[in-house]
Length: 492
Image (cartoon, rainbow, N blue to C red; front, top):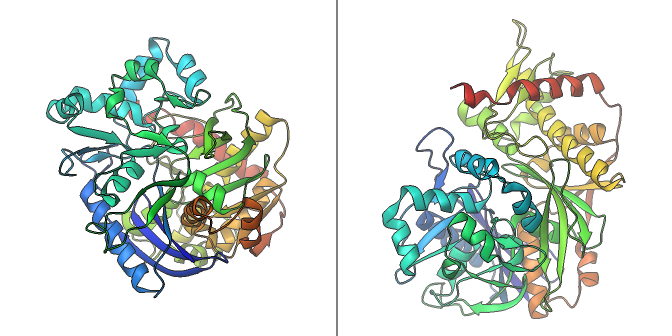
C-alpha cells in the first residue's frame, strides 16, 4: 500500500508517494507565482495553487505503478482564501501569511483592549500573521468579494480547505483543528469556532469550513477533477504540525524546527494548552478521531530560508540556495557583519510587524561570503531566541532538536545551530517531513499504519550535530542589531 501526500507550501507544491516503510517512492514539485502588489503585501492566486497541485501530483503518480490508497494534505497556514462555492473561482487573490497590511487593524483591536481575551481563547496574539485580520481587511476594502461571503455564495478558508474543496469536486468544505487554531477565530480549549471571535473580526461563521479530525476519511477525490482517482482524503494538518508528526514528535517534550521559507520551532505539550508567554504561541498539534486535542508551544520565525532566496534572487550573490553553504564556509566568521532578516517584520519572540531587514557592520573588507555567513548565523540566532524563550517558559531545556526542511541539508547551518543551542541537532534521512507527516496522518486514518508506535520505526537518523563552542559575542551583537531594526516602517 502507498499514500499520496500533497504539501501546498508558500512557494510551491510538493507531492510524494510514500510506501509502508516510510520511504518516498516518487515525488513531484511545481512552483507558483508570488505577487507583491505593494510594500509588505504578499498574495497568491488560488487557481495557480490548484494547477501547481495537479502538476506536482501528476509527476508523482507517473513515477509509480501502484495507485495510492489514500491522500493526505498539508499546507502553508494562516493564508486567507476566498472562492465561489459553485464554480471554484476566486473573486480575489489570497492574502498570504507573510502579508503585513493588517498591522493597523491589529493595532486598533489591541488599543481597544482585546488582545488579552484573544490570547486567552486562541493561544495566539493580535498580529497580521494570522488569518482573521486579513478577512477583516477584505471586508473593509473589497466590497464585491465580501458581499459574496455574506450572501453565502463565497466560501472562506485556508489553503487546505480550498485544495480539499477542489479535490472533492466541491463536495467538502472542511479544515482540521491544527489549521483552524491558526485563524484567531477558533477556541483552542473548546475545540470549535468561537462566535465571540467571529463577531470581533466580523466574519460570518456560516462561511467557515467544518472542523474535522486531523486523521480519518473526510471525503473522496472526484475522479473527474483528479486523474480518474477516487480515494479518501484522510489526513489534514498545517505544515508545522505535519512536520511534528513526520518527525515522530508524539510525546510531550519532543521538539522540532522546520527550516522553510520561515522557521518554526514546536515542542509537544500533550493534552495541555500551555498559556503562551515570552513571545511564544500555544497551538493545536492535531485532533484525534475521538475528539481529543494535543497541543504545542510554538515559536514562529517569518524569514529564514527566504533570506537565502533573497541572496539568490534579490542580490544575485549565489545562483542556487545550496551554494550559500560553500560560500559561507569560505570565511571563518562574518567579519562582524550582522544581518537581521526582518523582511516581513519580526515574529517570535519579538513580534514587531514594523521591523525591517537590516545589515550592520559593513566595512571596505566585507565581501559576499561574509554576507552569506551572516545569513546562516542569523537563522541560527533566530532559532536560539525561540528555544531560549521556550526554556524560560517551560523551566526545562530541550534535550535535542530535530530539524527538517530545505535548509536542514546545510551542514554548516546545522552545526552553527547546535553550537548556539548547546544541544545536539538531529537530522533525519528524509527531510521532507512536512509532506511525510501528512502521509502518516492519512495512512494512520485508513489503516496503512496501525499506530504511532509503528510509525516511530520509520524515522532514521542521517546525521547528528553535537554542540561546539558558542560565540556569545556574536549573539550579543545579533540582539543589539534586532533592537535597532524594530519600528523602522513607522519612520516611513
